Length: 268
Image 1 (cartoon, one colour):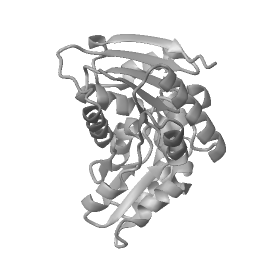
Image 2: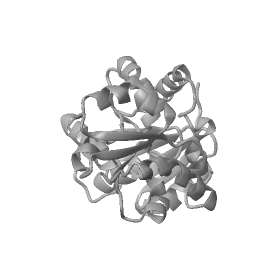
Image 3: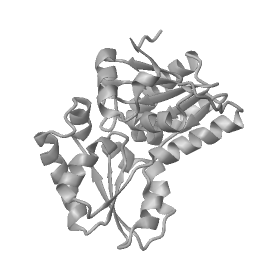
Image 4: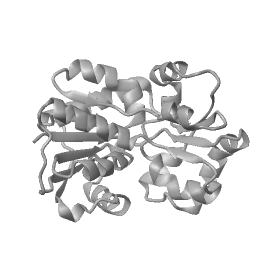
């Protein structure tokens, strides 16, 4: 059985962990939230790359054999260097689901809500360049949303007002599909539906990421079938108690089925 690390700038990657516990409940996980430094989306590219590598090295030192970089910004800015430095560990990243969105959109108009760092990244724009030109992408930075989600205010009036401003250009363009291009944004589903109803399809990539994780475990002969539930350790650079509380509130998985612990991030 493999120990799997899941790293994010904060609580956004809980959306990935939630899906991982649904598909792979028997595995052991460490969830690492760098909430002291969230959000990453408005920080310098060099800082993001250095910090992301440092935290992935921490997970490797904890014994993780697979690491999921469950942060779109960190994936865009750092995953290439992480894979070079940690070449003996499988590194799985996340990226906005613009390809499935383009295939699904009836109108050929797709909104992409992501951090500014993701939208500006070479990785994102290289992916965009591979898609058919007849699909129009309305790119919108969700500035200010991540701190509100981190503060447990995903459904607050303040979040609703800010989200409405960010969605306005996408709505005005007539998009019928919206890519949630940050792992924090699936926690805004209720708010988005409140604003837009069912008029727009929502795309996030948590299922696809965990399918890739499953394939990697199969390649390593680490995929086990068991009625037992694995351990989940929550690690935070800010407040491990708050992280565990947020996990219990936001995740659909029954954490009581797992051996749960939490601790503060300690870096040498």
